[in-house]
Structure formats: C-alpha cells, structure tokens
Image (cartoon, rainbow, N blue to C red; front, side, top):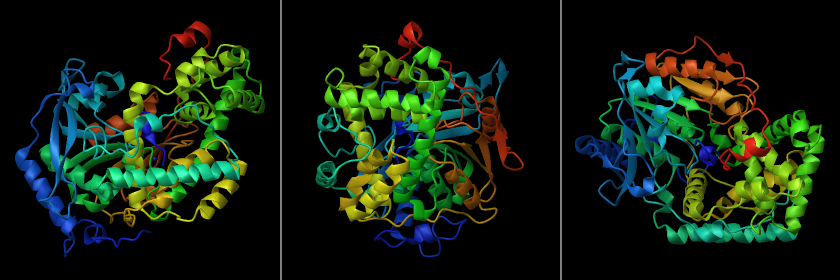
Length: 533
C-alpha cells in the first residue's frame, strides 16, 4: 500500500503461530511459539542493556539537540541467539516546561511514519513546532528506523540508479506490449530482492511489532506510548493484538484497514479508487481558481490541461527527465497532501505557457535521493509481499485493474505495477494477523482519520474502530490530507493533546470541520516555496 512514505515530512502459506493466535490479554498464550520466547528474551536483554545515547551519525542529518543510539533485535525471533541486527533510534528529552510552566514527564512517545519503508529518525525534531510543544514538554520524542530502513540492516533490491531511471511512461490503459514489459520488470525485481537479501523473509509486520516491543524495553518503558501514521497504524494494531498488556496509550493516525482479507491486495485496489476521488478534489480546487492558473474553469477542463501536458511529455520529456511517469508521481503527492496543490497547479500552468522549469524542479528525480528511495521501496515490497498471499496469475491482476481503470484511471495501473513483484515473490508468506482485542484488554486508544484520505481510505479507520473495543474515532470531515495529527486542524489537535497529555478521549465518535483549503499561489510567490511542495 502506497502510504505515508511519500512524506510525513500504506491468507498465506504459513500457519498462524501461537503468538498471534494467543487470546487477547496474553502476549504468548499457553504454549509459546519459538518467536514468542525469542521476543521475551530479546526484550529482557534490551531492558538490561538500555540505549547508549550519543551524537547522531552524519548520515542521519540531525541537529546536535537530537541524540541517537541503537537497539539490537534478532533477525529471526525463533532463533534469538542467532544473527542480530541493529535498529537506529533517535531521541530528544522531554522539555518539562511549556510557556513558563513546569510539566511532569510522562515517558517516551515512540513514533512511526508508515510506509512500509519510511524512517522516523527525524521525529524528535518536531518538538520545536507549535503543534507539538505541549506534547514535547511531557514526553521524550523517540523516532527510529525499522528493520530494513536506512542504516537498520538496510534492504536493497536493485541498483538505485536503475530504480530512479527517467523518463518513464505511465499509460492509464496499457497495451499488451507494455504489460509484458512491466511483468518482466516485476519478475526481475523480485529475483533481485531474493538474491541481494538472504534474510528477506524476516522483514514482516509481525517482526516490526516484535521489534517495537524490544524498543519499548530498551527505553525502560513498562508500557508503550505509541503514535503510528498510515502503515504505522497497522503494525501498531498488530502490536496491540499481540501485546495488549504492554500498551499505555496508542494513536492511530490515518488507519490502514486491518481486516485480514484486505491485506494487502484488496487494500491497494481500494486505495486506487480513493485516489481518483482525491484527484477530483484537486481538479475542483484548480478550477475554482481558474483566474490564477488558467487551467480550466471546470474539473473536466483541468483534466484536459493535465492530459495535454502528459501527451507532450510522452513525446518530449521536460529537461530530458520528466516524462508521464514523473508527472504522475509528482501529482500523486497532491492526492496525499493539499499543501502541494498550489505549487503543482503553478507548475502545470507555467509549462503550458512555455516555461517547463517549475515542473522539472518538482518532478525530476533527485540523484541524491536515489539510495533512500530505492531502499524505501525495497522495504515496502518485502513487508507487503511477505505479509500475505497475493495472486500469482497475472490474469487476475489484469482483470481487476483493467476493470478498475475504467472508473479510476489516475492511480490504478501505477499502483498495480508497484505491487506486481509480489506475484513472483519467492519468500514464504505469512497469514495476516486477525487484529482485535477483547473488551477491556486495552486502555482507550485514539484513531484519527480524514474522511477523504486516499492513501488509507476512511473505511479502514471505521474497521479498526470496530476491532479495538474502547477505541474512539475522530474524523476530519470533508478533508483528505494523509496524516492529520499535529497538522493544521486545531480541533483534531485538541483531541490529540487531551489524549496524550491527560489520557482522555471523546465519549463517542467525534467530528471536526475540515481545515482551510490552501490559498492559490502563482508567479514569484509560488517560486519562493520549496519545490518539493
């Protein structure tokens, strides 16, 4: 599932282990599986060792105020004395004061931004932002790079230069020749993942949840306070299912649908439908500001302008690097976050007026980011392919995505191509965890969701709410930003602060009015903004 890795800055061949099948309220059940024993042992060792905090590595690009360390976890929890891998961790201590008032420290708040494949190492830096200051006063802010990500036993499936090769095509209704080409690429990518990564099968959501419990122990926390966004909500929910007695507070921001039947093939189909709706939201906004952008006074006219640019790039890539594939990827971000809308519209408008520079700046691959992008995609692919069974016959993919592309062409086939290596995956597949706890097994938890979120469609938040008794859903109505906690909506932030600082949740589902749409920008004002927005 394409998830918050875009910014923030989502039945198998193996039988469920006893650890997963254990009754809610128990982390291991009456007959612990080897992985359960390995998790307990790894957590005990981590608690004894703690984390030795020091200066962060230069590669982490973090300021001196952030301290870093590592936590050792078993590659394979069934063999806790076997190969160990180190997860990098970052931290700032609780400020203990806000607006001149002393604040009691409440422990560590651990954050994961999703992906799979996104790093949370930057998270402690958010404490200086106004939306986070009250939380940063009470909590140590802790981020980390999950297994496979960054310097945490990194995965790689192909040469990063090949992964970011440009320009590329991106047909919304591909012909048979193009499909054969993409099938060959997916097969090659799956082979590369297996050949380059001997421990590939151990990069799973189950192990991400186990790693989180080891991190909790290393931090000296008897119970975990955790905030996950996008995919982070899914393995947070798996953690809550596996270790309910270890949970203090949990925030699920933009929830993945945890229904085992949805993991992951069906979730990706649903995501493509939702992106079509969000793409329409963007075009309506552009049309409303036609006096600024001159791209069309109706969503249909805006689409015509976009398709005109797309057609021209297919024949003559902008700057030799921006083809239809790069155009689609750039505008996909507008489906995630509406703060991209002004710069994307400005770039499209400028291109049609003869100035391709803004589009090149926003859409061309950045060579310096190639290694990070390839690594993130490798982890994304490994986790999703390992987590569940996928159709292995391309005719099923072809049938489902051809039908869907008739009504949701914007993202459907690009989403399919991103996940197609899972059809040819050689590592054994897990059976998805049946997320859920018994009444009273968990303390109250908080779910945040935007009603028109495309990356994690709203139905997922409702499903998670049903599966976790005592959870409360806060909805930003009529909005579609992916990841809404500590964002521009004061109502949402009020609920987040009340929960993390006081442990209080609304009595029932709560609704917040949408945050304000962005103001249109053009000319010098648009050029002055960072071009990754």
